[in-house]
Amino acid sequence: MIRFNNVSKVYPNGTTALKNINIHVKKSEFVFIVGASGSGKSTFLKLIMHEEEPSCGEIFIDGMNITNISKKEVPYLRRKMGIVFQDFRLIDKMNVFDNVAFAMRVTGASERDVKKRVPYILALVGLQDKADRRPAELSGGEQQRVSLARALVNNPALIIADEPTGNIDPEMSYDIVELLSEINKRGTTVVMVTHEHNLVKKFKKRVVEISAGDVTSDKKITEVIKNEI
Amino acid sequence: MRFSSAKYLFSEGFKNVWKNWMMSAASIGVLVLCLLLTGASALLSINITNTLNAIESQNIVKVYLKNELDSQKADQVGKSLRAIENIVSCEFYSKEQAVEKFKDTLGKAFESMKENNPLPDSYKVTLEDIAKYEETVEKIKEIEGVDTVVNRSELFEKLTKFDRFVSLAGLIIVFILALVSLFIISNTIRLTMYNRRFEISIMKSVGATDWFVRVPFMVEGVIIGIISAIISSIVLKFFYDFIIQVIKKNISFFNTPFSDVSVPLFLSFLLAGVLFGLIGGLISISKYLKKEGGEILGW
Ligand SMILES: Nc1ncnc2c1ncn2[C@@H]1O[C@H](COP(=O)(O)OP(=O)(O)OP(=O)(O)O)[C@@H](O)[C@H]1O
Ligand SMILES: [Mg+2]
Image (cartoon, rainbow over the protein chains, first blue to last red):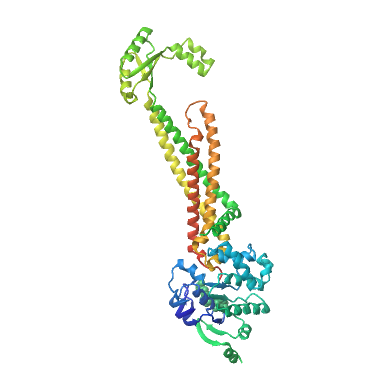
């Protein structure tokens, strides 16, 4: 699903965010990305969605080489993936339904499809009763579930999440990752950046650690626990 | 683009105009000014052209006789005039008749002129072929006893010059105003875009094409253009009718009724307004999307 071959990223101001990274994420895998602040985790995600271009190396998404795709192709690349941010990024003036429908409308989906699909996805994230609410009338955990619904609504093959639990309390966080795990079981690839070791420990998944732009470990969860003990 | 998304994008465009009504009003104001001046100078030019055509097609020449001529000699001039082949008819106006007419148009105050009449005798001459106008006038001037022939070419020249001046001055002013209105429209739309930068950023992150992001702002520009065209047409109509009313009492210059030009004028306004709105919108959108608007903000 994702393949990074010797990818480096140097920002225009000279900061080296990633150094010669090699990562391969298979279809239907669930990967946690961990690492200190400033280590290059978000940069990794930005490269996946072509928000940034790699300085060198090659990136493949779903078998397609996206290293040098043109600006015009970027929207179509992004429609293959769903993105969840730490700060939810919902539109305040739209209700829950429209916030989710938004991602479909952007792709030119028909209103009929929107009316069928959105309630289904809202039910999936457990928000079927709150379709008419404004984001401001929801808890942080609920808002993040709306944002997750928006990421899922176009049925993407890949979900990328940048610290999706960073702004919500631990219990809610657990629910969100549980939900992601559930979606992953249905075949969607999930890449999630997180700071929370508790979550990483609870869900036995693959963990990629990045420090100072380098992949310093890439293991299944059981080994991480051993290391910490 | 499907109908549903078209509907969505258009309603977004309308909302943009209302949300940002102060800047929208400023844009509309400047665009209206621009259209009004263009329209006014076009109307003036049309009227001048029509007047020129009217003068050109006039086949009547006034021939004034020298003051000291007696009636016998005046008759002589009449005979000579009739002898010129291009002259169809020729009608005599005595100085008394002239004074009578003068008095009728200008009032009783000129009663005293009867005693000391400064007006000359004259002939109203009708030509057959206007193409031979200059030639015939030359022949008339050669007749003994003829003082002056009222010449159309002087008036003609003055009006042509004025027409050119109006067109040129209008063109320059309109050009400057056009730049100003493009500037203001593009800034208006830029401001809307800035206000909605967060939304645009979300759109981009979920895979919206640049076109999808653009359309509401282009609609905003077009709405500004249409509103400006409507306002300009209405204002110009009332302004023009008012001017006609004032001026027509005195001279028959503004002789083109507004209804003659209203449809092409409105259509041109509409076209110009829509074009300006679109161009203004496109300028700001491409600028914005090339820079900060192309990124996912704050990530
Ligand atoms: N647009 C940018 N221009 C220049 N430098 C940048 C830019 N974005 C990130 N960086 C730098 O690149 C490095 C990696 O940043 P990145 O955002 O990937 O870190 P991160 O691992 O996501 O950190 P955090 O956990 O704090 O979110 C940092 O040193 C950061 O300052
Ligand atoms: Mg980050």
